[in-house]
Length: 131
Image (cartoon, rainbow, N blue to C red; front, top):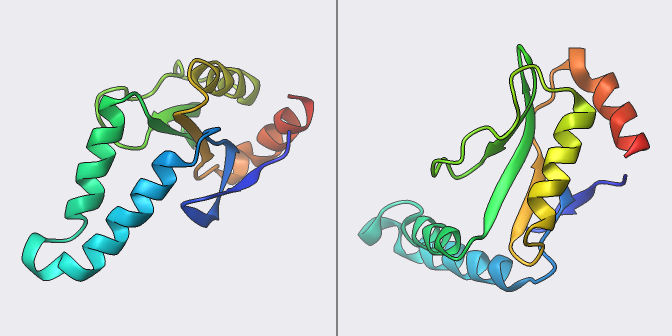
């Protein structure tokens, strides 16, 4: 499997991105509005509002990351989904969970790669190649 730059932040790698760019365009406009309204509205006022709106429409960004137990698939917006992976999940299992999550609604769902501990990096890279 090949990773791709995440459209909202090219420094982040993504596994799956929405088939529609509607949500990314709305986020871009919200960030532009925030840059001119930071003093009057507060930091990320419009961005938070648009992300909440997107969640209401079923658009989620999940992140593959690791903790001391293994791999995790976390909701990046902290809106209650939490970790979809069981404790001690392997790289292969988390990739399958990520794919299952994304494939339920590919127009609206994103999976990015977060921080992978060095101890788990080799396992993750191997699982990516085989997936």
